[in-house]
Length: 367
Image 1 (cartoon, helix red, strand yellow):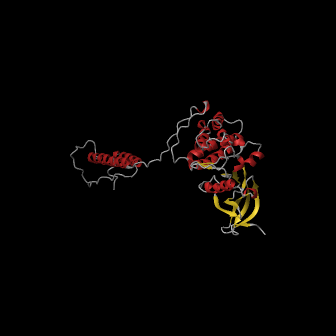
Image 2 (cartoon, helix red, strand yellow):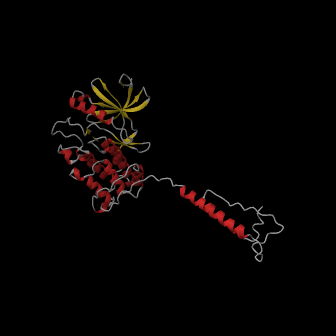
Image 3 (tube, one colour):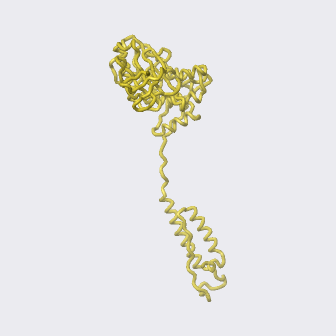
């Protein structure tokens, strides 16, 4: 018989992974008939108040986020004295697994596309004043169906407005390789702390034969002083798109960000010192038709005047006096001037009409 949680709502199917603090299971939500992932706190931490608080805070903070590149939290609960979090199940592997299969680097365009998604999701968290603090390939899931990147594991995330520490002074949490200097020194944590980790991830993903601009962008991410880095993931994403602005990645990101004006990014070195200023994207205004209507009216007036003059002169014999009355012929009504709503068509028809009227005998040819 399969194990269930939350009053038999969630049925555990198999284990997806195991970490130091918790185990993640694939399960089925029997009430909504959907596949989910359940993160269950390990037995040996069930009595640790600090860990329990951190675990519950993960659910609370992650629930603030609603973004395609962040794993969604559905529910929370407790199984006996062990808290659990019910999350979106992402069918696929981690970025760490892909890097291992491809010997630590992947194709440049693919890497930039995934980094762009990372910056989108993390930028959303930063806009909500949330710092992840543990960005690394193991916490970046890649969905099989569309290769969508999803950020997971906000277990040690910190909200900017929180002042209460949930770790004892001198106790460092995170993964050393991806931790910024201020994080290792137990200093102030800001979005720039996550930018440092993104720089480490980018350095792993991108081929070593990358452009000089990308070298400088990554170097800026890895600056020791947080003030010298990009301020948040959104700014880093814009820099990556600018550095590779002629490729598909830059085009896609610019299209997605047309709702707001981007600003000139500060240079990170010689290769980025001449980045062009951002151009405002303005909605095209419909062309006014008033000028077109005025032109059409003016052409009609001119045409009428010209036709009246042609008819007044008449096509008669050039040797006859001008006041001689025509004999044996009824007076002809003025020919109709062709009209059109389009000025170009009106002008073309008018030219044809005037040429026809100027020919000898043209008046007699009118019905």
